[in-house]
Length: 89
Image 1 (cartoon, rainbow, N blue to C red):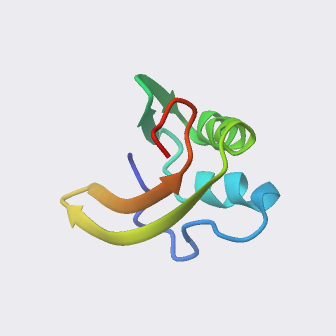
Image 2: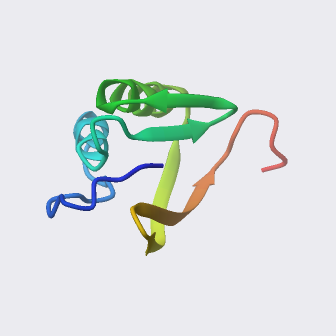
């Protein structure tokens, strides 16, 4: 993930789902990337659409564990709890 380190209003979403996708996409640079389920989503619009689709497909809770910077890269660790189709839960 390529997060925009210059943003001071970036938060891991947690309120209403309709606001989550927009809030999360604003955390990324214009050319930021999310890699999920074998696909890359590049740019804020693609990231917002990816988040909206995930919210419709799954019910989950995302809890931020920590964030670290490495040069221009930001690594965010989060705990994802859900009952996914085909899982043992």
